[in-house]
Length: 79
Image 1 (cartoon, rainbow, N blue to C red):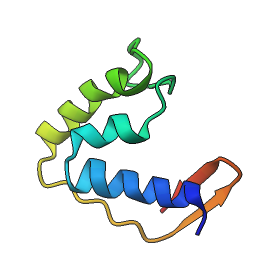
Image 2 (cartoon, helix red, strand yellow):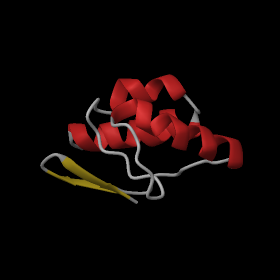
Image 3 (cartoon, rainbow, N blue to C red):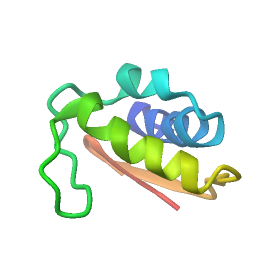
Image 4 (cartoon, helix red, strand yellow):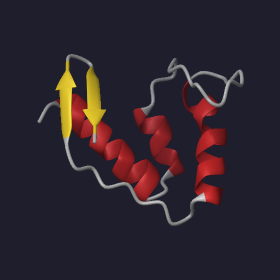
């Protein structure tokens, strides 16, 4: 497993399954572009927090199971 796959798996486990809002800043690049329902969002964690907060409130029982992953360079695909 590549480093980028481990990061992607960690993201789903810590951010979504454990609800660790603080993990977002640990893993999301400060200049990451956030695409959230067509709204203009700030880049990086500050732009992602509103989405995280809405999803966490609406889907409090959310659990993501990662069945598979693969990577190509700096990109990972999680299934």
